[in-house]
Image (cartoon, rainbow, N blue to C red; front, side, top):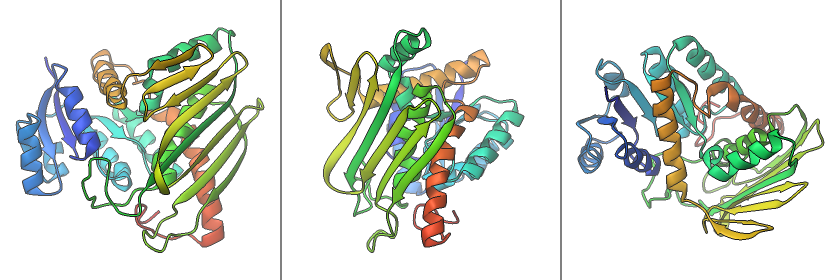
Length: 326
């Protein structure tokens, strides 16, 4: 029996998840959007049976089996808990929440719900990651250092599709979450010995920190370095994994992987995100946790919370755009 899916959100990730669903036998049942005109247009374009501006209305629909949350980051925690309470299988866009406490609340709700829930952490799903993990698990290769960088110009509140957003992005809890999770996932979630960081002061235009650097040291003397800025003149989005046998440089914008063997093409980011959706649907049918399951993302959230705690100690706990209410 095909699964009836509700997608909440019609930004870039709403587009990508809808395109992925179109490649499966799942039914694009309901689209939840903020504005009626935009929701109606998106639902028609991507083949949804109906649309609504109320997530609560969708959750009350017994026909809907699962929800994919592609909504603003600060809404994920409350919406995920509502979906789980309604008995809907739930796929949550990164990040799971905007605090470690929030993440723990979602995980507690998910573990108690009896339904399948997972996170959209696409960096875990690249096939070359699985191959490297297999080599590290067998003892054939050891990861020593992982680095990630994300630079983009975000002085105006426009997303990747050119759409002017109603919400403000957060460099720490959104973009650094990708790299923190990738690093700790690839390293096997080892004990963290120390977290050092810089998170910038509030920018006079955007009202949020725009620059960040995070260094994580593990108990096994492995390191994870993440740095980036929303003030860059042009985009950089890549990661580097250094092992005792090779070095792997993934350029997400160019779609290439460089190693000692040379440079090879990679599948697109959209294709990798589709793998997340395919894994989620298979997890529902199989009754198993997805690859990016709730408990497995908590180590990354703990690192981000340590950075946020340092910022709060310096500047004071405060609600800012993109993280209202903390």
